[in-house]
Every structure is written in structure tokens, then in C-alpha cells.
Length: 155
Ligand SMILES: [Zn+2]
Image (cartoon, rainbow, N blue to C red):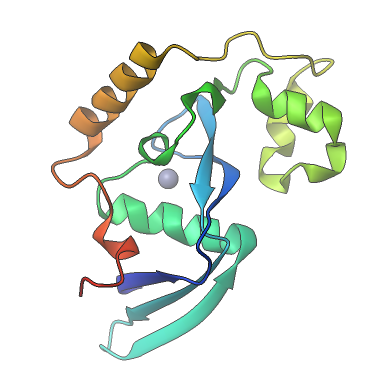
């Protein structure tokens, strides 16, 4: 996919659990469009447009963000939902409430947690949230706070 452009088909984003090889040891819940269209060119320059739904849509947004130097914690609106893989946290709580809701991509984590319990390491302090955002911006980005790929007005 060359020059992907994402066009959301819903007004609202839905929080979905994500993790990333670029950020080992953490997972978090990220608001994403679960109904969108993606246009891109292939290596011959031909334009393609596809509809994408659900976790496929979330994954495409995640990967397109990488092209802009954005990693998933920078998209999070509630950093209380950023958690360590090594211990049960908010995801474990969700799974305990409804085990059917678990994304297959997270089954290995959940299975690693003996007796899923309430997370005690949630980050709720606003200053901590701001510091984490600042860290990820400095570490992974160079410029704009939003991905131009999610702004349909930009080419
Ligand atoms: Zn990633």
C-alpha cells in the first residue's frame, strides 16, 4: 500500500485493544474507526479502494499511523487503559466480565495471567498522562499532532 488515505465512514471511534512490536511489553485501548474506506496506490501506481470493518479497520489505521511516526499510545484518549503485558490490568477486568469479548490477538496475554483479577496499576494521574504523551511524541515523531491520513481534506 503506497500513499494510503483513510476515509472514516462513521462519526465515532470505538476503543479497541492494541499492541505493537515497536512498543514491547505494553498494550492499550485505542479509539479507532471501525467502518472506513482506504485508498492507496500499488507498486505500478494503480489506485485501489477498499472498505474495511472492525479489527481489520483498526489494524489499517495502526499501520498507517506508523507511516507518520505515530504509535498507538499517542492515539489513546484514556491512558488509564495503557497497561503492562506482564500483569492483569483493565483488559483482564474486561475479559473477566465477558470472556467472549477477547480478541484472539490477546489470548496469549490473558492465558499468561493466572486467575484474571482487577488491575491495580492503572495510570490515572493527569500529569503522568501528559508526561507519557510527551515522551512518545519526542521519541517517535517529528511534527503534526494528528495524522494527515485521517484528514480527508488533505491529499
Ligand atoms: Zn505497530
